[in-house]
Image (cartoon, rainbow, N blue to C red; front, side, top):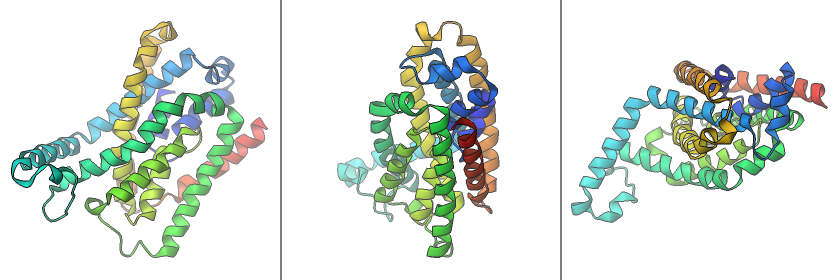
Length: 287
């Protein structure tokens, strides 16, 4: 489960969907039954895996995050002369580019952060079922394939934006798109990349923004729910969670290293076909 989590969280094929489908396909009925319970040891276990994934992302992008917060420090140092308004008036000519990227990442975190805190648990209880996850995985494939088709038809692959010029409006839209990843089967990274592509970014910048955005979203959500693992729900699964989290961290690091190179020259299309075919086969299996 840890290996699967670290791969499928970053590959645009939905880690949440695979965490539902894999136990069902392997006949791990105790895990399948526990996923739709309001509280269960398996949910606490999954939280630990997400923290491991976020740590893998944090390690890979460590230099980027250091640069982003140095940009914040420089921007704060300029406040006495430029005024407090300089913190949110992002004029490209006089705003530190690292601070600007940090700011739009923060903007993109807001919508999915709020909705996730309010409704993530309810969405998981309602939709973390094999048939529902199969249907949403199929829909994920359609989203990726249609997104690629629309991008090609729009011609934006010829004149694309740079990540440094992403607007706050565009970042907010990408953040809103991640809300759909609360449905098991819809990929967080996949739908974020599609939204970024529609805003004019290329595949490489879309992937990097999606992975940077996933880091605080996954880490904060996991940290907030870690008390569940420390409480009664974690009894009997803490060592398994530690092992699974370490596996998720390592595979997340390897996955993001692979995918950042993949998206310099390739597209979401193979992942779209995988999601569509795998989703349809699972629908047949669990219908």
